Length: 156
Image 1 (cartoon, rainbow, N blue to C red):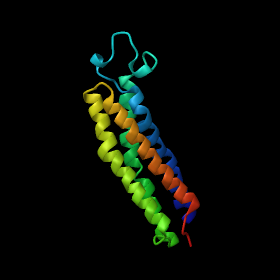
Image 2: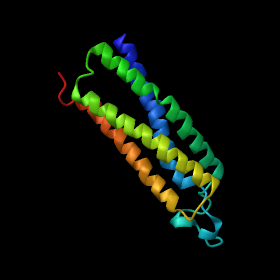
Image 3: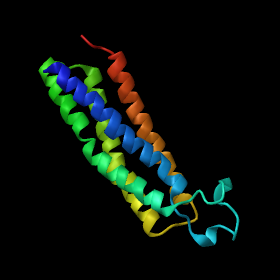
Image 4: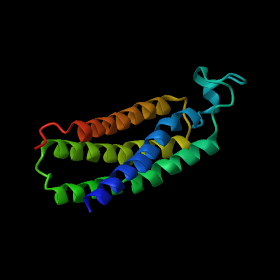
């Protein structure tokens, strides 16, 4: 049973968390910016002409939402696995759970709504720069969780 739970936990993390992390990171590159912010014929922010693609941004926004929701499998199975293994009192698991909650809240309350707003009302790029920063923080939180899962500081 532990092997199955661990497999589901790791695979869901790779597919769903990885997918939402990549989609959130790529969104600012493809999201539209206000036409007034870019002189006619000039690429925005030094990027190659034509890189902005609203259809790609909409797809990345959808992936962020769907994979973010499906990513709930990761902590749920992780908690079940922790209970089965009797490890819920270990500090590294509790820190990982806090960081996972922070990453989930960041995705649900900041990244996804700002992506939606960026698609509805493109601005000059300020919103996209902050989205890129938040996506980086989201990815960093997950990177720390992965390191905790490997190193397991304070494990018995």
